[in-house]
Image (cartoon, rainbow, N blue to C red; front, side, top):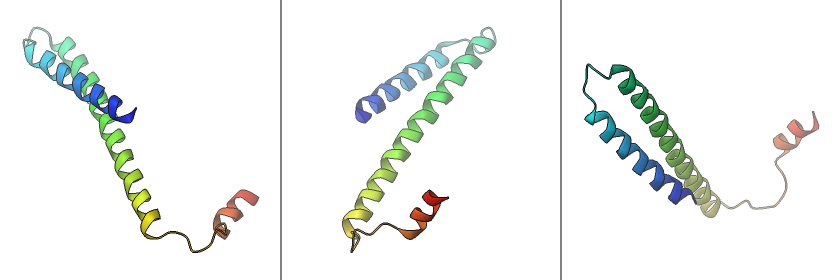
Amino acid sequence: MADETEQQLREKIASQKGSIADLPTLRKTKARAKLIEYLSDDEETLELLLESKRVDAVVRLQDELHAPEDSEDCPISNMSRDT
């Protein structure tokens, strides 16, 4: 699902960049600005998706390399739940 979303975002961004490049610079300034805004929003969404995938991979690797030695809950986590 995430890979499909990533691919859709990449295609949408490429399309938006093409649309922006096709607009005349001076005549359609407002339309161009709106397209650039949408483009930057989609690029930010893609960056967040990729960063989330990267963090998930690092956490997964950390868990594989340094599995907990016992299954006891972290006392710090328990303290925050008690308050």
